[in-house]
Length: 493
Image (cartoon, rainbow, N blue to C red; front, side):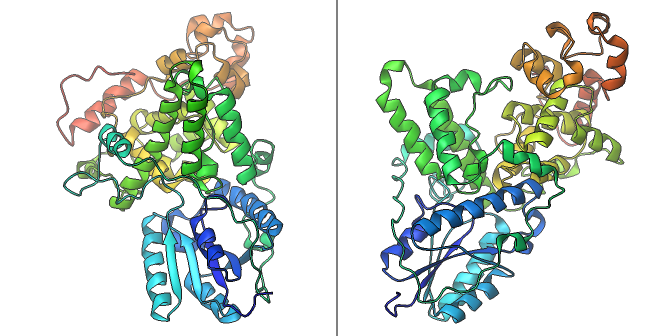
């Protein structure tokens, strides 16, 4: 029983776990009854409400979170509607005197949360928000003049000069229940999952929820952490952590991941130099950097950080070219393998993300915003800070961007990072018969003559939709119309 103390509402958002959950722990330590709440309000996220793959993941994650809460004497109350209205309803229904949540950093939600906090406090409701999704807050890692960093190496150095991220908090073992639980919508009523969706095959690949996140982290640390530096760029190998969707939905905290990797390095010093550990920690820092940029430059999800790129002459009437790219039918095997991996699994290897993005923006001269929208809908780890940062980086119009004249050559990239063609063969079975030397350029005469099914091959796999060298010149010319670039444009990675 609740002993007549007013309950606290804990508003879950992108923090779908019990471990290292400051808002939940704060409510628990008040020794009042606790009511965990999730509000589905996609309209409040503006142009960037969760896409198809994200909604599928969210459905599974909410189901797992509810099961975990039940083990400690609570359950998740699901509602939909405008957040302030729903919170007001719940305060009225339960007599709650406090609302606690962990912060989000997307521009639309920063504004919404500030408004909700002010409104509830004006009515003497206790409201506190906490940091649960970053190692450090965006306002804690600033240059000496108080401005945000726009170069990663300087940001990383500043991050390392701060005290180590705080240790993760333990989960509460038992939650005090209210005398009466408010009504909750059944999870299917949120309408997150459409049975006819392509997302149905995702359940064979992913295990959403904090348990799935923990086991993925443990496996990565045991098997891949020490070789991360070499293997992280190889889409043909299982060398990355694949923690990105778990981190996005807050099923595991970056503090927990950071300390688990650090502890492993300390305990296994005999294995040699821990370069892999630091390469991995740097990737956590790139995630922080992306959040810092989104927070300080809230216009960047659909506008370039560098204003001169507003005038970039993107091609018009590109629907057919965009669709060919989306379907993985560009005629460049590494690009197409990446796009098909995305469609089949809701995820894409980071090296393939850079190459597919470069192809869209530089070879096809289609705006990075179009690419960002497609990734937003199809990635299980679609995250506004990281998606925006990655696309602006590749397009050359963001912070710490690749120089615009860095135009990935999909053939050379394939030969370097998928040398035996295993990644391409996995996702483009129609090219499986080609020998290694031809797998990344199937249009060459030597490739066709050495394939058993040369005639069939031409029908089943398209020829390249553009000539890369010509497209590269067009991209450089387009750039020259908006600003002067360095004379040396030979960097064709």
